[in-house]
Amino acid sequence: MVQGLLLVSLLTVIAIFVARVPAIADLGFSPLVIGIVIGMVYANTIRNRVPDSFQTGIVFSAKKILRLAIILYGFRITFQDIYQVGLEGFLLSLIIVVSTFAIGTFVGMKLFKLDKDTSMLTAAGSAVCGAAAVLATEPVLKAEPYKSAVAVSTVVLFGTTSMFLYPIIYSSGILDLDPSQFGVYVGGTIHEVAQVVAVPASIPNADEVMANNAVIVKMTRVMLIAPMLLILGFVLAKFFASGEVSEKNKIVIPWFAVGFIAMSGVNSLHIIPTQIVEYINIVDTFLLTMAMTALGMETAISKFKNVGLRPLYTASVMFVWLVVGGYFLTKLITEYI
Image (cartoon, rainbow, N blue to C red; front, side):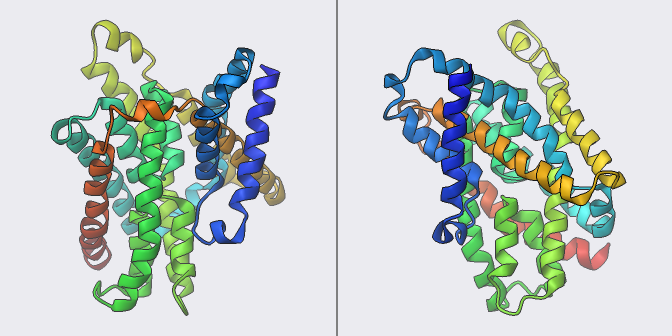
């Protein structure tokens, strides 16, 4: 156990330092993404040379530490953040999360014939908050690690595309959105938190309201991951209620999601000093990166062969929905509600 944990921790430290390299940081790649890449390199190169005894610690990181990290993720937001963005920001976040998850799951399973787990993991990454959402959804589905890696790869591709696309279309003026509306649009439709922060920062003379709205709406989407997971657990139990699938989904309440809400509530009370919360978030980033790295360490490239390009097609449909559908939803909600 300890040897495996130390190995995952070492690769995690490397991932964090690599993510701080200016050229990589400018692209908005979080340590979580770097971690899964490093883990996959390990899995497909030297894994067979590492003693099997290390595996216990690696699995512990991918399962148990993951749940703790999701609970601590609640310290990144407060209920006041949701109140500040108002009804329009909350409504947009809710519609985006529900519609994107539904579209991704339906298109993946019915149109491109993907399995349920890969479809839902890919949908969760696009709908909520990228790699962190994939990580949070994986325990509910009890999916194989390589499926999470597939989902994260789609987040990286289309989230990075968004970082370059959004500043261009804003500067062109074709969207007819003021800075405040564009901030809501960015927060409501881009995958990762880091990518949301990067977009206003890359627009010359961007209004501060744009950046604030983008982050607040994005964190509102993050907050919705907890009720989404709770509902998902009940839906899986209801519609897959017999045989092997029933056994797989017998735990319908992801308690770490409840813990996430509880920690958000504690953070909303402001009873913990700001500096302590900052330390908690630093530790949480490390734990999330550990979990993502461990998932990568369980992901052999050979497992991707049966999946092919179907997750990419599924994610591309959601990307078009987020860019186009998200624009019209933003206009409708910000102007008429």
